[in-house]
Length: 590
Image (cartoon, rainbow, N blue to C red):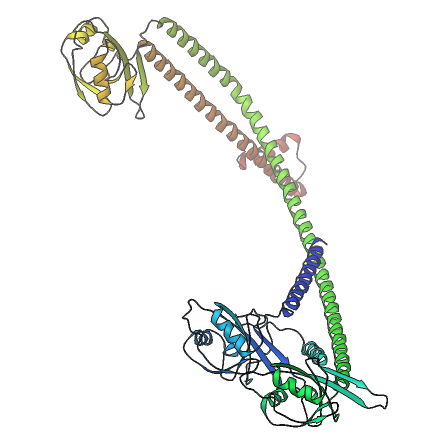
């Protein structure tokens, strides 16, 4: 159950993360600074716009454009050495600046070509928006994928239907469609022109009471406008110009405004309404069809999700059943293994109990045999201890300035202490040489050493071959030993005996060692006796068992002989029967 709860929590977290990612993507879609934006025009065409970032490191840095001037943009006529060439070399093809593209915005500024050129002169960091002149294969990403401006990515996951709706809303701001009382359709639309560099409007017009009648289009800004706009906003012969920049007046006033104003926002009244001039009808039909299609897709998506959910539940149920089966199998195996272990444990305990009983019986038999011998051994050991204590009491006066240690090879190492008190310029009288452990004594040349030897027993006399190993607690370094011997007046010296002679070890130590040796010998002898008695007890047990088996075998054989002889032989007296049995026993080696 805990695993299932964890899996459900993980699934919920994954769904929440997916929803958050989708929300982030939608929020990024609404940002205007997209690397590439694709717009579907009402006439079926495609408009591609893209963003480019330039940074001029110095005022002399070249952008690298060959440009032409248009009313509201700069036309790219070629690419030369400079920032534009570097951009193309470091970005994918759908972000390359090509001949025929239009620069329509620079650092958020849109307007005339002169305004854009002025920004080029003063700006160090430039964010340029281009409109693709000729849309080639690959300029429109498929599928559109998320990216950031200027990084070569694309931020556009919005559905084409949403884009079309937004574009149509923008279009309707410049288009008004109404129904007259007689049922006819009345259409008014707006056109924006910017005259620069002697550009002309390109209208053939005639004065009318309500304004200026368009009789034809002969190039100029009007022709460029018609080429870039859908049918419903194109100026046609028969349309009437009725207002300029919000001013509605006579034909003469309108003519004067056309000549004097640089920016013109002209309101036209459609003369002859053609099919397609009112796009809202077709848009409504398309919107309903699109809505129906989206509804069907949503229902299909929900059905697919429901199928996935059911499949997931079925898979989960199968997994639960499989887990339950595995758990039952595991429990059954554990019970079987537990039963086998219990049987083995019971058998082991029974065997141990039998072995313990047999051991106790053998120990009882052996203890009865060993009891008397053990008592004698203890009496001997106690007597040896008493003798040792008596000898120790007799050796209390042994000199304690002698230390005897046993070496790994079994020999004795003897060390002894000597105290010299030097007065005036008295000499130690030791001839010494340094060795690995201290100062070796090579001879006695009088002085304090000779006086000491004359006044002390053999086991405390300093002899050639001994080694001086410590002076007043100082040991190890030969130089330190020499310095202390020269400096101190009172010298407490520890010597290590070179050759150990008889009598060098104290009597007490020798007595104890001898006594301990006797005790060890007695203990070893007692142990040997105990082992022999144990072997005798075991042999007795084996003989008893063998004898019992032999008796059973003989009794069975005797019974068979009696049966054989009793069937044919005459009756025997008691003495004859006993004599016959005796001969049978002798024959079988009893």
